[in-house]
Image 1 (cartoon, rainbow, N blue to C red):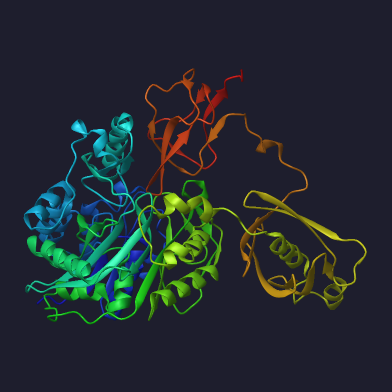
Image 2 (image 1 turned 90 degrees about the vertical axis):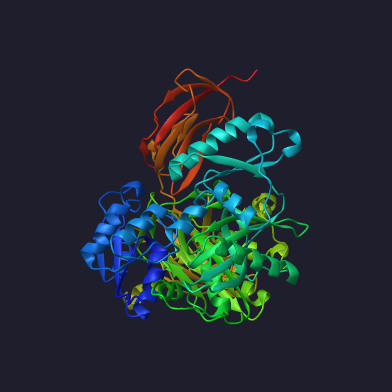
Length: 636
C-alpha cells in the first residue's frame, strides 16, 4: 500500500480544477503547473502551490514531461495525475514519473503503449475476440470501399480525421490528415477504415485494480459530435437492447484484461444502425465525459483512481446505477461560422444552481488562443432521461454568459430537438440539422429596447429630481438608440413611459420589466467594464449589443477581396506553389490556420488572381490581420 500526501496535476483548466476538488476532499495537498498565459488561471489560483513552465505553446510547457517531473519533485509532490489530453496517454512519460520515485495515477505504461497506436490496438483486440471493422488499404481502395474514414494512428479528439467520399480526393485527404496528425501528435501515421453512416458512438467506462477486479460502469452515448469531437454525452446510452449492452460490457472487460489494465479507462465502440458493435479505440485515461457515469453510479472516479494507485482493492462489483445523466460541453465558438473559436474576456459565466458545472474559468478570466475553447461541462442527473434533458436545457437557457460567442443556443436547441428527445442518436446529427439549429435568431427588438431603457435609467444613488425627471422629460419626443447584435442593426425609439406595442413596467440600470404582446417579461441588463457591449438576458434569449457610433470610422473599410484572419492563431500551412500572381478558384483552400486545437481553412472568396500574400507557415497572426488579397476576375 502507498500512502499519498501531495498530488501534482500535469494539466490545466477544468480537469485540473476538478481533480483538485477530489484531492482536497481526501486530504491531499495540491500542486499546479502553468504556462505563462495561464499564470492567473483558475487552476493555478485553486492549488496549494504552483510551478511555472516557461513559455506559451503546449509543446514548450504542458507537453514537457521533464519539466513537469522536475516541478513535482521541487514542490514535494509524491504523485502525478495527468488528467486528459497532453501527456495523459504517453507511456514514456508514465515510465519517467515512476522512475523519479513518484506514483503515476494511471494505467501501467505497458497498457498505455499497447493501446497508443490505434492500428496496434486493433490487432490486439482482434486476438482478444473483440469485434472490429476491417481495415482498408488506401493504395488499393475502390469505389465499393467508399465512404472511408481516415484516422490518425497516434491520437484522438478528432485531429487527423477525414471522411472521403470520392477517390479523386483521397490523396489530398491523406496528406491533410497526415500533416494534422504530425502537428498534433508528432506522428503522421494515418489508417483507413469504412465510414459508417448514421452510426452511434457508444463507450463503456471501465475501472480496474491491481488485484484482478475489472468493473464495467455502464454505457455512454457520445454520438452528437462536431468535427469528430463530442458535444453532448449521456449515460446510460438510450435504447440499447439488453443483449447488446451486455456484449459491450463483456468486450470492454476483455479489452482491459488483454492489457492487464489498472485504473480508469474507456473502451469506445461504433454501433451501426442495425445494432452491430465495432471496437474503435481504448482511451487509457479519464474521459472528458466521466461526470455522467459518476452521476448515475454515485461514484467519484478520481477518488477511485487515487485509491487504486495506492493499492486498494475494489469491491467485487460496482454499485447499481440509478437514473439518467446528460452532459453538454459549453464552448467559446460560433457554430454558424464553421465552429470558429472565440477569444477574449469572459465577463460573466453564471449557470443556475441545482446541476453540476465543471469549469476552469470565473468571471473576468481571459480565453486565449493556445488551448481548447471549452468553457465548462454542464451536467444534469434525474430519475428519467426526459427529466435530465429538460433540466439541462433549462439551465443552459437560463445561463448568463457574457463577453464571448458560445455554442449555448445550439446546445439548447439540440437538447430540445425531436430526434434527440426521442433518443434517435447518430454521428450525422449535425450534418443534417446544423443549418436549422443555428438559424432563425429571435427578434432582438424588445431586448434592444431594454438595453436603451437601462442606459437611460438613473441609478438608485442619483438625485431624486433626476430619477423623477426621466419619466417627465419631453413626453412627445421619442428617444432613439442604435445597436448591432449578431450582424443586425437595431434602432429603437421609446418614450419615457411607452413604446409602440410594448409597455414599460419598470426600469433600472440592471433590470427592465416590459410587457411584450401582453406578457410581462424581465430583461437583465449588464454592461461590460469598458462600456463597449451591453448584454441582455431574458426568457426570449440572450443578446449582445454594441452601441453604434454616430460617425462611422473610415479605417473600418478594407480592400475588396481581402482575406482577414477570423481568429488569432498560427499559420500551419500555405497551399503548395501559392504566390502573388497565382490564379485561384472560388472556394480553393489557400491557407490553414490553427487556433485552440482546431484547424481552419482560409478559402478563396472568388475566382481570380492572388495579388498579395502576407502569411507564411509558422507565423502567428492576430484577429483581423490581413493574410492575402484576391482580385476577382471580371464577369463575362
